[in-house]
Length: 182
Ligand code: B4P
Image 1 (cartoon, rainbow, N blue to C red):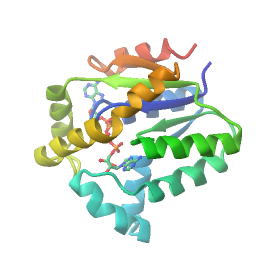
Image 2: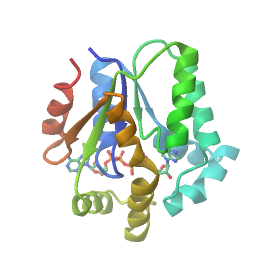
Image 3: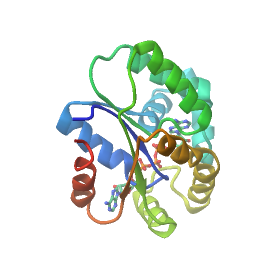
Image 4: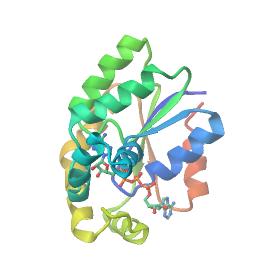
């Protein structure tokens, strides 16, 4: 079974929902940069204070901050992992390649969760997190299109990308993802 995975997709596609379940089913490290950043905000750390306003605006936190978090987690972990919401721009993807080369590891599968904007906005509005109001959601979708979506072609060209329809029940989507793991 593939053990080193990336989840890619627009905000609200269900990356966190699916990643959490899949990681716990297969004993993988679930590394969500969004969750880790929110934990830093909650703890009131220097890093969290820097991230808080950026996240509230729906923009991307600085690459250096996010990379420091990912490096620390991956360096201290043996075994499989699932990166959820990282990388989010080409610079982060380059940095991840460098880190994985150092660790002598490689990505085995990139799962792209696809959903139309109307459903994305609907899901996020019903979740109601502090960055889930309509203006911020629209901005996050623009940031996704401009900064994150170029990664689709990058991983497709590397032969790593598989797309999954992210509509339907959580269970139905899980089954589609499981079928890709080999
Ligand atoms: P994230 O925490 O990554 O969150 P997200 O993209 O908004 O949501 P996700 O796709 O995980 O959706 P979820 O499963 O929760 O990012 C938040 C912010 O953190 C970013 O805007 C940015 O500021 C910062 N950040 C994170 N990573 C970064 C990085 N690498 N670099 C820089 N900044 C970074 O699902 C959404 C909702 O839909 C939930 O309520 C869920 O219950 C529901 N749902 C899920 N599946 C469903 C289904 N099948 N049917 C109906 N509802 C469903």
